[in-house]
Amino acid sequence: MAPETTPPEMLTPEAPPQSTLLELVRGLSPVLALAGVAALIVAGVFQLVFTDLSLYTIIVLGIGAVLLLAAIALSFEAVKDALVGRRGRYGLNTLIMVSAFLGLAVVANFLASQYNARFDVTTGRQFTLARGTLATLQDLKVDVQVTGFFSPETGGVDAILKGQAEDLLSAYGRVTPRIKYRAIDYQVQPQALANYNLTSEPPVLIFETPERAQPVFGRLTEAGVPQFTEQDLTSALLVATGVKLKKVYFTAGHEERDIGDSGDLSTGYGLIRQGVEGDNYQVENLILATLKEVPTDANVLVVAGPKTNFLPGEVQAIDAYLRRGGKALFLADQNTSEEFLGLLQTWGIAVKKGVIADPSRHVNPNITDVVPITSAHPVIGNLSIIFLPAAVALEPASDKLAPALAACQQGSAADVDGSLFQFCPLLFSTPNSWLEKDAAQSPPKFDKGTDTAGPLIMGMAAIIFGPPEGKGKGAATNPEKPAQFVVLGDTDFADNANRGRNNPQLFLNAVNWLAEQENLIDLPQKPSGSRRLILSPEAANWIQWSSPLLLPALVLALGGLNWWRRR
Image (tube, rainbow, N blue to C red; front, top):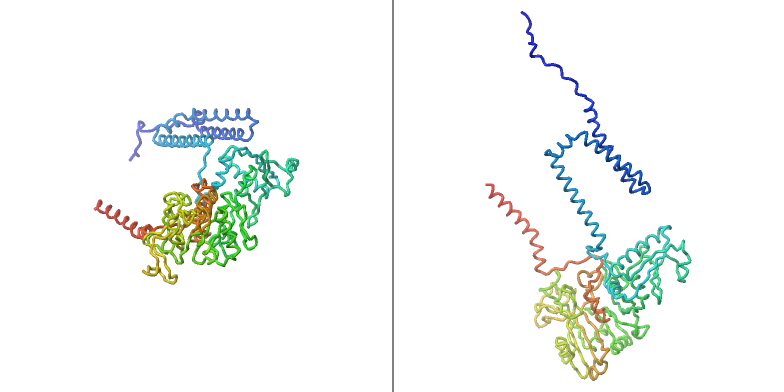
């Protein structure tokens, strides 16, 4: 049997070779595109780094452009398909979105360079100038030349302090154009430094006006780190412009709160002292047992809860200071010495022993951490939430002084035995509160007949014309310099451990009101350290129960709704 054969017409001729010259050239298109992109990158590097090679930059840029155009021409159909096809449309859309984003970024950066603005969103406002500094800068009437003498090449302390100084002065310059800054390398220009006859070695900043020059040297922190502080720079600015710093004295020697203790959770007043200095006051301790009198340059005297007895001469010194029109901030609590309470009694304010408990307004869970109702007095300003732990109650020392409370509401003063009195309540407890007399009772509860029912006063601002015992012939005795003081029935509220929310602000407001710096009362102070969350009983209960109940209930409700729709 003969084998089967395929008919000739069924045979397929062998395909001709595909490697034509044109296709070989088209195969080089990716190489040309890659070389073109590389040339553009090299041109960009030349332009950024070697600005003097502009001719070579143009040549390389041209080569890159020619290579890219050649790659596109050789693979035109592939490029066309890539652009108009499905994948091409997606890629083109992505390119448009990226270009739009880059365009917005360019516009945003241009606007930022033209309109400079900063926003401090840190909890402690660590990059915001203190309110005293802001007020000082806004009140500047003359230009101040600030010269920094540094030698940055040496590194170390000079470099650190130069950076700090320029950061602070840049912030000053954003407030006022009157601050002019220049830096001089004192090793290159030693004669410029010699002109100032400094007593210490640089680095140094010199604040200078035509009348005077004030140097500022960097200080070392407790950790041994060099620094320029905002307080140092603002104080030098005030000295250079001829402004005298007001003085605040804190009595010491009777276990008052320690203004040198800045421990984060301590009972000291170190952080409050920093706040007072931040408002451009000079703060000093006052040992009355040594000086025998309150210095005449005292703008405000602070007596912060003395526990041990004052000597008779010390009480007389404070009394004499008030009689000559002194200004004082008095803080009292359960452990305040009897001699100090007697002084307050002489000046018309009685401190009632016991701790105020207020179930309606307190910091959970302790009802003796009272959140008082605030008045509209300038000492309070815009403060809304303050908390006073274990506060005592205040009241007029006698019935005949009761009209002094009503006089405050009328904006006048009550004539009591020839002297004029005005007592303005600052802080109140609610009608549901009481003065708990039994310190051992836990939890506190109201005992009718023993405890004093609220509302109760926890803070008082007083203005008195004439001696406190009367016979001062009213305002005629001393119409321009009355005794003026603030009494707060707590000392814990201002210590380092309780500095959260508005507590430090209450202290600073009182100092500024007494020092006649009321322009600083409505300006927010820069807080430091951690903050304490203060909640009403209702808000605390909401947080306590909403987290374990409300959120799971919401998830169950959404799950049930989804099941109902799909069943």
